[in-house]
Image 1 (cartoon, rainbow, N blue to C red):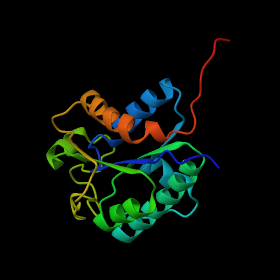
Image 2 (image 1 turned 120 degrees about the vertical axis):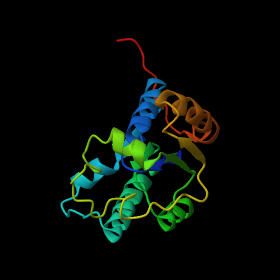
Image 3 (image 1 turned 180 degrees about the horizontal axis):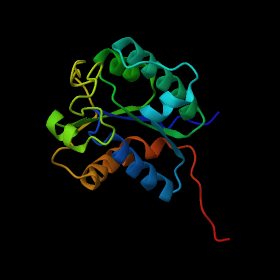
Image 4 (image 1 turned 90 degrees about the vertical axis):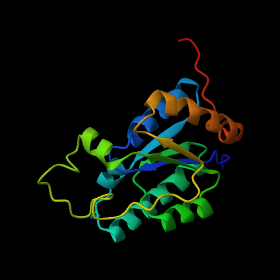
Length: 184
């Protein structure tokens, strides 16, 4: 079995920029030959036959699913990069305890900015605001993240460069696999 490179979880409110930052990081790693896999919360939710809701208990179960996938992927020597709202400190504590070399990235973003960026109509006026994290489900501010970015004032590129420093220090030295591209 390959050495586990670790786990990177990018957390924050809907429309805080999690998927954008995660995709930038995936591209950076892949360009350099490091195998990784993006686990986007919305995409993971859609692949399971049992559809979970958005209430707090369903969100906790979703985190458990993502943790199980992340563990499996990491054991194969592939870095899981998770983009998920991840609103509960108890779930983040479990990740710190159960996931090897867990890097927690918190994207702090004012709800007003998230509403402005909202492309999924999560925060839309007149929309059903039931079970929306940041509206009627509190987002518990992380107590011990590895990195905190204010995504309301920092560009995705700026956040990527700072996160890349953490990746170089914490993740790359542990990477068991590297794909070397040769000319065809």
